[in-house]
Image 1 (tube, one colour):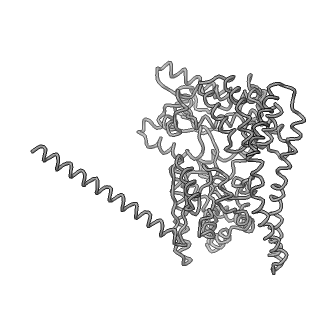
Image 2: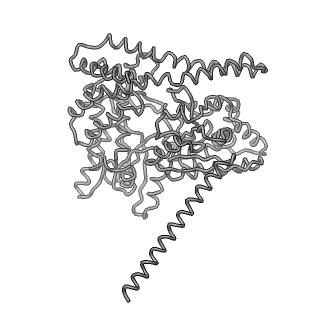
Length: 595
């Protein structure tokens, strides 16, 4: 009898499993059919991004809803679909979609190789040099009101200034954050800007330090951290001075690398354009100026090692969410993160029982003072945020059937009114002139005062040298390696990796020349043979002139690199270690160029 019951239960479970499988199969088919129908319709645009932070999808959806209503009033039924993808899967998803030719209409730029921009995305340089038509529409809308609020009057003043300006000039950074020097093109339009600050537990500071004042210098940051450690030991409780993971440690790494080595970056700038690019840093390596033993570079590592003493044990294996959880639970005095985490942190703290809540303070990451006994001689001052630029940027893929509709949506979302609204919901920093950040986010507004540039070893963004540098850097910071081991490993392994990156830089500079020549020819034909009124002809001439500058830059880029190398080779010192580095580099470069 028991056997019969078991057989009956087994059949039931099997049937249930088949039913679940059938439901999943039908659901998958429906999703495929639905996606296929959306692709076939000319009035559907799909937007992919990795922003899963609290409020961001809601802010973007608010713009989508308004845009759909706006188009419906014009008599066009438009559907905009946002597709959030987790960070960890984003690169794989985007790469698969682009290579497979099934990419969405718009993709948030980032977490994938930047060379994809030239292959799979439309340049937007021409579009952003025209006025944003929605600004003129907003002026008409406000003019029809009997009276304006104080906020609308302030907005109206900005609108009058922006209405005839190129769309790019309506952004606070002139949309430079979306400019790609490698292609000399703009590929994206963004909605927000971001900065990094330190959050701190004011209640904990009062209890441990006797005040809730934020540290004003690196020395005070270390002093406050030591006091928190001592308090935890005295009370026999686990209390972290700084909640951190590799994610947060990376922020400290590049912040203090910039503060301590920005003058080296200016020194390595060979063409005096204000930036030490990857090729110029490579030349500094070949001359022996930039090595792991450079005292300023070594000092930047010491700073992060000193801070790492206050991180939790095993921070390298922790995720960004883990460190954030420790802070909102009141187990840490401070944490560093960007404006993108502000809403999530505050919401989680407020969702706790009343006795567990605490007041959050915000302060800029403290600079190293010139009086610091160890690092003061190298301290230039705080790192400027002038290059914070426009982020949360979206590019339009070459697979879209709705290019004009995509541009229209981006224009619609980047008026002062809509940019304020999107970021108010997302709790991010707006980036369009005339847009207003919410009260709490004023703490995160970019501070342009300070210095820029740093002396890292990166020859090109995302290149092999960057990967190598990461491989040997983090074991040192986590205490699993010594400085001499780090320095020797990096220096001995650099030549072949630098040669690979240099080859990609050298040959890649000519890849887009044929397309640019074709574009220049089309613009020239438009000027010579176009039957246009004077205004249109002037616009065509400006377009032609703008196409010549980047083309000439690409055509001369190899000669520029050759000249930099000639000058560098005349300055190689008679030092055995530097001579060996050069021999290994040029041997690897010869091998790379022959392939």
